[in-house]
Amino acid sequence: NEYQWPGYLYWAYKLISEGSIGVDIFLFLSGIGLYYSMNKKTDILDFYKRRFERIVPIYLLISVPLYIVIFLFIKPGSLFDYLLHVSSFNFWYQNRGSWGETWYISFIIPLYLIYPFIYLLMQKNKKSFIPLLIISFAVKILLIYCNPAYYEQIELAVSRLPIFIIGCYCGLLVYNKKELNVTRGIILSFATFISIRFFNIFLVNKDSLWYECV
Image (tube, rainbow, N blue to C red; front, side):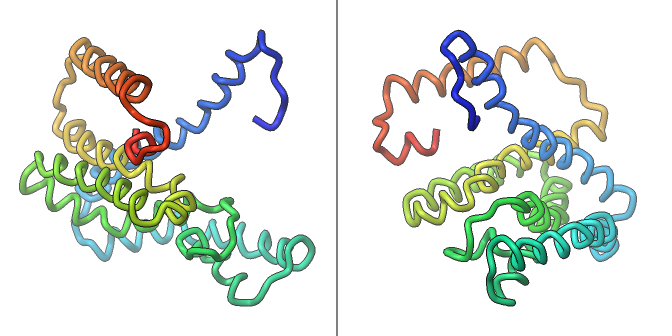
């Protein structure tokens, strides 16, 4: 995206710009995989232990030397700032650095923390994913309305919360071997996409709150 693309290659620029959708796909698949993980053993502490062992040691192996180099040779800072970045908490800490190298770790750890409760809700009532999905959109809207600067800081993560919730729900369906009507799914997805684009292009003022949400 940093290069100047000639007009006849604009399609390639747009295609490459959509590469970040891979993160959404991974979050969707994570929601499915976590359902299987919880079904192996529903003890929450054991679930947390397994997630910790798979993520934190490898992450620290990378982040500790990375930020030593950054803070010694590139952008000097305090010990507090160093610890914020190594822990990845800087992503959530307003006005404490704008680096986004480890935003995914900052996001996935809270998702793992709340997942057992999402799982328990869906076990009681699989349709509980609908209010969870509404809440995930409401969080985004409230942030845009109440603190747009902070929303801009964490938009990389919070805008992807709905796809994780959908993945959690699909994990339940996949585990129980529910069949998907592919034709109906494609039609519904296409209709939703067209509706959002129409709403965005023709009905939304670009300076309004709803433009940001769409």
